[in-house]
Length: 267
Image (tube, rainbow, N blue to C red; front, side, top):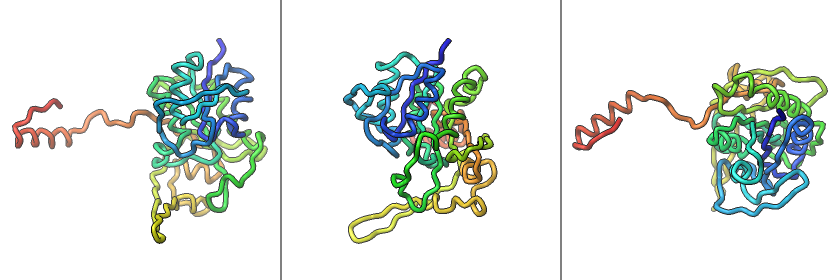
């Protein structure tokens, strides 16, 4: 039976990364593309109440966010997929703090709430400064991303991987001709945001990208950032929603609150 895939992204339907994934996945799966009409990078799980949709040579262009695209694709625009794939994003999505910020990852999280397994694929592009837009990438540069994503799409569903993970956050290096080694990782906990005021404006800076040198990167072994900085493919199996099953300390605290305030409690 042919695999059904819903493909989306946050860079926009005309980006090179989604074209690269489409062309590879469509060679052996039924691919329905539902992607933002324009760049929606770093929009997180922002959602719209109503969006315009237009036909595109790859599928459907939605004038909204990646979360809009997943909901519209699953509920209306395509057949029920076996798998949702988001990407390939131009730029890495690494670390815990980006899990709620990235539109690419947010598309996978949205799928998880529909109980559809998902893969979010991003490519680390080393740049001086933050200007990824100035980097011109071809479909061939995404060869590492298409190879690993295609393999995961073909093999994870029957392997039981998604019995324990809702989605996979995949980050790859730019292709250099040889397949990169692969590592199962956990998201780095580094967070280095700061802000600087200049007159009436506040400039926000993400300093974490300033230390990606593989010789000096401070992230520990086993983290997504270290793996990618050292040239490996990082695959982090993740869950959604992010909850704890029990919390005895909080239950005790609330029992005390209820006793002090004569309030009923259901713990």
